[in-house]
Image 1 (cartoon, rainbow, N blue to C red):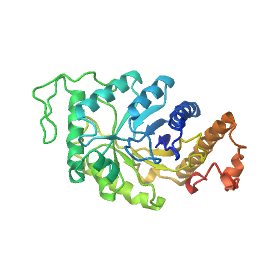
Image 2 (cartoon, rainbow, N blue to C red):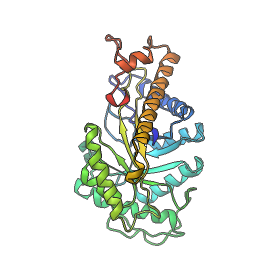
Image 3 (tube, rainbow, N blue to C red):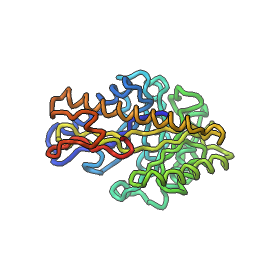
Image 4 (cartoon, helix red, strand yellow):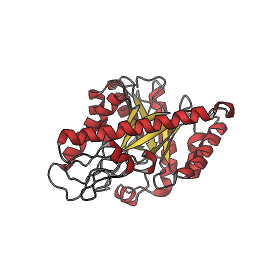
Length: 329
């Protein structure tokens, strides 16, 4: 089991000068601290028009800044929106390849379709076409990465003639591909296409995750032609480990993401290994909390509650700066 940081980059109203700047600077600082603490990867969303909830509309620039400040932590698209006209698949292939080169091969390529009316209507996207566009775009992106010359000839994207799409990614044959979903049926499709699972199940009780993971594993078993040149059989999910600060001066928040390796046989799933995984999760949750405490101490914004207070929920009621979730305690 591996642990990652996942960012939406919210900014609370009122939108006063400097708040978005502070949110991005804080996110960069936390990415560096996350690498020092041993987190496996750093992920962000791509969202548009979702004021307050997410101000992360062009994460690739942020990824480049993270790559320049770190050496080991992987950098994940969580996700790149593939339907037209969000991102052209050839431009996506080029952009991901550049990031893979400058990060020394640390990219995880997460993909998605978008789901909010604000985004779909804002870009005039037909919601009934997003699944088909996502599927076609994935094929074009992999072709552009792995073929010397590539010509898109599909329903939604065409190229007049073969082109040499440059540069090529550092990871061979290409970066790991992931797909985001929240529906039970979507989990099966990600497995059937042989790509890693980004299970966005925020708002669902943890016990509902089991059915989704089972469906994903069933899809993997039925996969005969993975969309990529190899099967990525890793599943990842996220849980809220703390909320963002109520203060306007610190707007960035994160969720801890748990990455689970491919399923093992029943004989290998022992009580001892399950207990070890639980201990690891508790340890990493504490590290996450320590990162936030360190940030508040550095900024000297509030009198910071102790970790013991955080874990018991014994927080200042007047200006609470944390809200621990059950999964983090």
